[in-house]
Amino acid sequence: MLCALDEIEDGQGKGFTLGTGAMRREIFVLRAGARVYGYLNACPHQGTPLDWVPDRFISAATGLVLCATHGAMFRVEDGHCVAGPCAGQSLRAVPVGVDAEGQVVLDAV
Image (cartoon, rainbow, N blue to C red; front, side, top):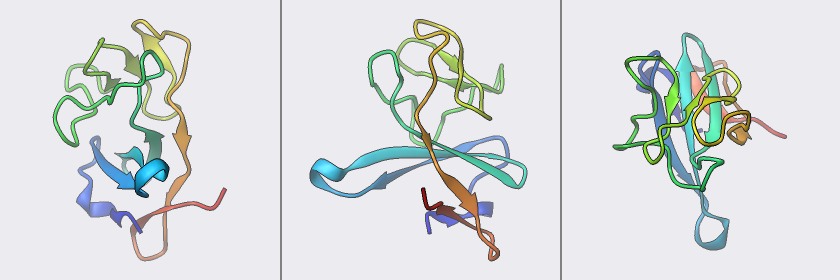
């Protein structure tokens, strides 16, 4: 379990750290209603984190994921970059879902 769905404001995201040492991965989960989308917190352009402050991934102006480093913009539903230095590339998806108890969980791959 990562968190309860209601811990992520609709239209926003939340970051998480998975693992330790060489296995450590920074991810984030975005919420769109009852749906969630997970991605590695690394821009495909240079691998830098996307959030400009903790848990701030979505641009209020566009509703898109915004890279804090170079301004690349990504669609929430598929992580595809629609503008910026990595246009046409995509964020790396992390399989997540919501279980019957309303908890955001990593899905089995």
